[in-house]
Structure formats: C-alpha cells, structure tokens
Length: 583
Ligand code: GBH
Image 1 (tube, rainbow, N blue to C red):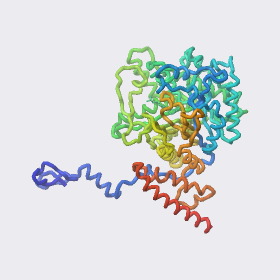
Image 2: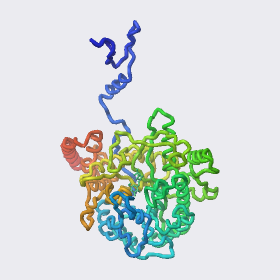
Image 3: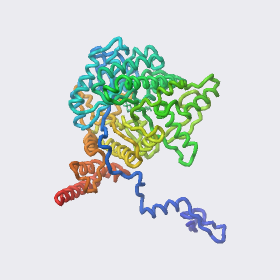
C-alpha cells in the first residue's frame, strides 16, 4: 500500500492500494494494479484464454482442401495464340502503375506449364484447385462474335490434366482481367456489361461446364468497384470516388445474378454443379471496446465491405445501414437523390438467392473507430469509419496484412448469423513475405496453423457450415500493384531461372499434412491412431509446438522447442506402438 517513502515522505507512492492519509482511519482502496496483480496470482501466471487455445478435431469428411491462383497473376502468354488485351495488360504497361514496373506478360508462364502446375498440386495433395479464366484469352474483344479456340483449348487441357490427377476444379469467371475492348466502351459502368458477361459465362458453361462442378462468378467485387473505379489504384485506374464505385457495384451484382440464373435455368440439371460469388472482407472490432461509437463504426466497416455485395445476394437489397447513410449524406450535400443506385422491387427479387454457397476471401482484421468526413461525397466518407491494426499483430510481407487469426472465426460467425447460415467455402486465405528468399517459411506455417484452427473452432464449436478452405496462393505470382515483390505462394517461383521452376517452401509439407489429417488430430488421445496415425506425430512436429504452445514467444525459442518436441514425438511414437500392440 502507499506508505512513508523515506526522504520523499508521502510524495512518491508505490502501493497497489491507495491510502487516504487525510483520513484518520487510513482507508485502503485497491488501485487498478491491485486488481491486475490479483488476477496474475489467481491464474498463477498468464494462461491462454480458452478461445485462444488450440482446438483438436476434424473438418467434414468431404471437406474441400484447395489452393488458388488467378489468370493474370500466373498465366503469362499475354499475346499468345490470339489472346486479346485485358485492362491489366494495359495498366501494367503504363509506367509506374506497378512496383518495379513488373507485369504479367510472362508471370509464372502457366500458359505453357500445365504439367508443372498440376504436378505441384498433386504434391500438395489438394482435393480442389481454384483458378480463374482469362476472359480476353477466350474472347479477345470481349464478345462472342470472336471466339479464340486456342484459349478455350488451354482451359480444356488444364481441366483434363486436373481430372486425370483427381483434382476438382473451382473456376472463377472473373478475377479482374476485363477485356480492354469492353473497358473501351465503359466497362462496368456501362449497363451493357451485364449482357456481355452473361454471354461469356454462357460460352464457358457450354464449353467447359461438363468438367466443372464449382463456379464462381466474380472474385472480390469490392476491389473492382473501389480500387478499379474509385481510388484508381487497380486497373482500369479510374479515379471516380464520388459515385463510380456504387455504379460499378450495382452492375456487377446484376451481372452476377444473371449468370447465376443462366446456370440455374440452362445448365444445372445437366451439369449438376454449383455457382456463387466470392466476396472478401476484413473482420472489424471496435478500437475501444468500451465505446459504443466504435462498435457502430466496426459494424459499418463490415456492412460497407462484406455487406455491400452479400446483403443484396443473400438477404435482398442493400442493407439499411448503407442505404440510409448514403441517402442522408447525399441529400444533405444538396444532391437530388442518393449516390447509391436503387434496385427495383423486381431486381431485388431476381438478385436475392442467387447463391449456392458463400465464397469468402479473408486475410486480416482491423480495429475501427468513427471518422467524420464532413460533407465529403465518397465511399470512405459514407462509411465514416477507419480501421487500424493492433500493434501486437504480427507483420507480414504486405503492409495491409497483419496476422489476427481470431478475426476469421468472428467473420464466419457474422456470415452465419447475418446471411441465414449458408454453406461457406473459404476461397482464399494466406500470407506473404518479401525480401530475401527463405524457403523455411515458418511465418506461413504459423499463419495457416492459427487461421485454420480458428476455422475449425467456427465449425465445431459455433456450428458454422464451413465446407472448404483454400490457401492463397499455390505459387508466388504477380501480386497486382506490388508486382513480384510480395510472395504469397506455398511454392516459390525462382524468377532468376528462365524455366521459372516451382520450389516447395516448408509450408507445403505442413499444408499437405493438414489435408491428410483433415484438421488437427489430438496428439494426446490414443484413439486418434487410426490409419492416419502418422498425422499426429507429423502435425505435432510441424505445428503444435512452434505454433501452439510457443505462439506467444519469439521465434528464437526454436532450438529449445525443437529439443522438446523431438522428445515428445519419440514419446508419442512409443505410446502409439504400445497401443497398437496391446490392441
Ligand atoms: C486477394 O485480394 C486477391 O483475390 C488475390 O488476387 C490477391 O493476390 C490476394 O488477395 C493477396 O492480396 O495496398 O493498401 O491499397 C485481397 C484483398 C484488399 C488485398 C486490398 C490488397 C490492397 C490494400 N486485397 N489490398 S492497399
């Protein structure tokens, strides 16, 4: 407690308890530190909270384990065999748009490396592979008036190779490489886009659909709307923050719905596949958990991110939060109507329900707080919220990506609660590095271990209907405006070798074991020792220790942990053998 501090008298006080020296009874009042210290004593240290502990268990038997890529990021062959130009070809060939003026002319040369790509997928042991089609490769001017058979053949060969390897394709129709010819007529801003997209989708269903059971219409529509037509940081590079993103988003949602209906009406019965959209979102927590304004801001971040596209498709129409804020702010600025376009009642009906699953890309989380932009008329201002990251979240090779595994579980729960408990396919999740090449990518193992474990908690503890998980990315590739500098791959691509060989990083082994074990077998329970017995040992060696028990420690504990888990593994091996012989 505060007491007489020698030469300083009662001026410097060291107590856990405040003593009121003006009161003859000298009452003691605990300070915050007393409560804090009380908890340390009670817990005998700093145990992990329950929800941060590793959960052991398995995903569904038919869980889809996948890895992903996208056409412009890997294919190259930018002018091969009659391919047309995409907006990214043009963008990347404009000076200073991409770091180091990198471009996708050759990328990973996947256009010429079907065998190599399928070989590394086989090595990974994924059950599925998510890739995207290059629209201008099959339709050089964007329209079905001019079909490039060589382009279609490339995808047919890829599909055949996957089929031979028993890997199921998950095919994205649009992952950002719009035919430049369509952009020349206004791209997503032109309502005619909807017809062009459905024509293209029709052709792809017709020509590839007997080999594809899972379709994704659009990848991350918000990126097209905001980055492509709002900030202008992505192709086509339009800076129309004022209204363009909302118009782009509107046409995109309609185009998605039309493609879904087309598949539903014309192809579903004979091809028996499913089709949906992939939206991306950060998770958002209030920056100050004791402040209602921060809760409201956090909610707006998710509503303006995930909800912008998910709400019309899953619940019908834009969310009330979006409609009201944008209308109010537009009218307050003297505009005659909201900058957010309206759907007619028929459109609302036609769009609602155009999903067979919820495709989700997720990487990171933010802490949100409100920001008042006055009467500025932009999406940022409409949202009126900003996000920062917690300083304890680990850095990665991308400035926007901080490691916050808990967020994926909360986001999955949000989807379950807000959008009617749909089956969810995680269509991307992953982490980058930059700088010196080190094939021992412990940070990626850590990321996957932690994030996938949170997905498992969502599935087993919260009852979220998670059907699949996809690691972004299969191999290092053109990371859009960051060029080749940020590497998300499970496989490293050696760009100094003209053959662009794919070299496995350590995470390949880790992910393969995760797939083989279909999750996280409990190393301590004997009955996990079935035909998958090795999983327990291997997963424990590669993940449990560095990523579980020592997750709070710096990586420098490795030498000690190696020693420990070598011993533990031996112990497990011995007990496993004993168990088997006694049975
Ligand atoms: C996904 O986007 C894409 O689908 C995929 O193609 C991509 O390679 C992968 O993730 C990794 O980025 O630089 O501050 O403007 C992820 C969502 C959100 C990531 C916006 C890039 C740019 C932030 N993206 N972010 S900033």
